[in-house]
Image 1 (tube, rainbow, N blue to C red):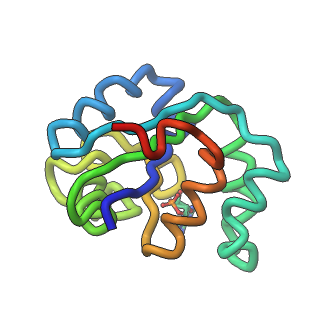
Image 2 (image 1 turned 30 degrees about the vertical axis):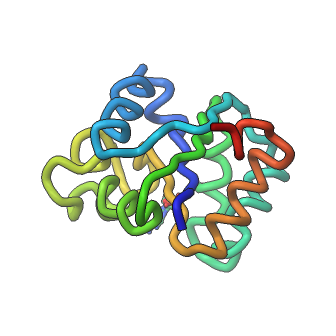
Length: 140
Ligand code: CMP
């Protein structure tokens, strides 16, 4: 699978790190095929993270993800899903490998600057969630 989805999260957008994170992804060989800015509603954040709805951190995660604008990004390269997961690093920045996006920029396990799809099924679903019908999906 050549495409995956990232979301630059509110903590990173608020600290003006969007450009640096996008540059990091481009340097890792990803092409940015689509990007938008959106302030998620409570219902959208709940829907996006519904796989975590039984977790103790769900309410806090939804509150954080709706606290400011985010940038969903459609990314493309060979082996996109595992490569992006490696590029962003572990969920907890304290455990993220040196040089990864989260090691460089994340504040905590929750305020961890970036999301990346974790499977082909979720990537397809998450791309549809933010970019359904977008012309740029199949452009050049
Ligand atoms: P993400 O890759 O977007 O997927 C689920 C998110 O839940 C994760 O990044 C974190 O922001 C958040 N998360 C995961 N585990 C925890 C935790 N133990 N405490 C708080 N937030 C968490």
